[in-house]
Length: 50
Image 1 (cartoon, rainbow, N blue to C red):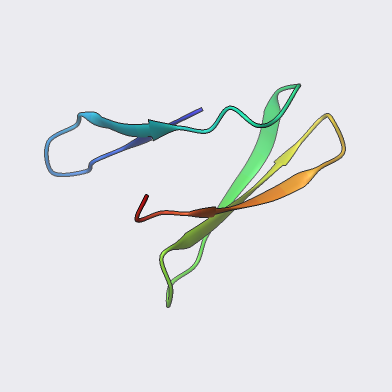
Image 2: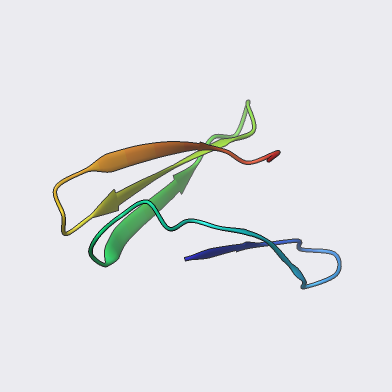
């Protein structure tokens, strides 16, 4: 998965820690974090500022 800058539509970073497809993405409304879940049965929390 790729995290994009909304204003420029350029890629910011890629989320490549999962070994299988990402099934869900959730964004925090109050802090710069997002969480992803995957078919590999893991959940990852990402710093959206990095």
